[in-house]
Length: 368
Ligand code: DAH
View 1 (cartoon, protein in one colour):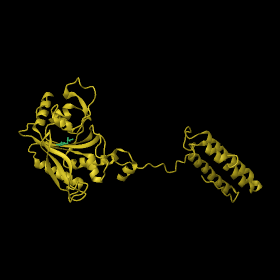
View 2 (cartoon, helix red, strand yellow):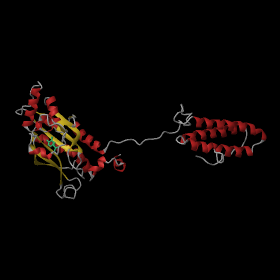
View 3 (cartoon, protein in one colour):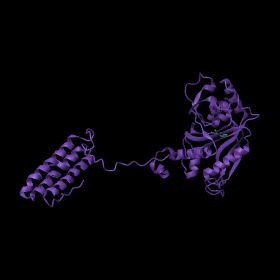
View 4 (cartoon, helix red, strand yellow):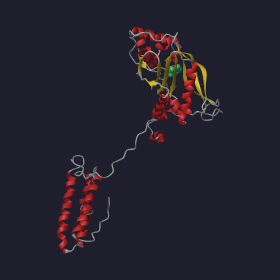
């Protein structure tokens, strides 16, 4: 708010007109500025000792020639009415912006544009790499049944491989058959089953989404995290297709200089199974703290779809009156699954997974 008393250099009609137009504008601006505090507005203009109306009228009337006193008095009265009207129509109840003392020609309050969360950004990047290869996207529920999350993926009840997936189960399911019991999905792989029951080959899909595990949170674990799953099923799909596809995807995500290697591993739903490692992007494979001096970073699991999975799918298709479509004699496929947090952490050199969920603007703004 402008506190100095404005000068009135001449008392002719045009000068008065201009001077009072400026004052009227001042009233509107201060009304807008003090919309939340009408008493401050009242004191500013009508305060008995320091109110601007009193100070200005005294200053201007004191040196006014006799014939200018009347027009000045009329104008100060009008100004006072304007101030009182603004006080009687508080911003919240006034009907028009003008009545609220709001200058609608002022620039509005700006809001910083939003950005995609770094995890979503990485997830979209991964999905986009596969979209360019002709894959489409499928989604599935986070509350899943034992059948889709485990049984159809060749984890039989009580199989020790289930122990690797610390499962959060939904309470009060004991009276249900084991395959119908509900749980929070521990991986995105159940959507492979859902897709194949729905669709006959050829299939090329990626499945991004949230997964849940009974893990204590630490620098690299979170009970809720994200995966992107992939599934390609057709005639004549071989392990070479798997290697070529994932090698391309890793180069697209981490740069064309990155090398991949495939290590034997185990997943119940793929045979053979492999862990994919990429050459360390921090030291170019020379060995550093980030790759534990091995030169390689383990990134994802993959393998050829196990015939037992195709059998479970066809059994379910038949039960639903659909023709079987996954005879392993002429159909084969590969699958893969990767953790989005892990990939984003490597991409950006983030050492604590908790940053993604903290909502700390100082962290998030770095991705704007
Ligand atoms: N579902 C596995 C997990 O969460 C990851 C995975 C491994 C997915 C191999 C796959 C695969 O599709 O073929 O640990």
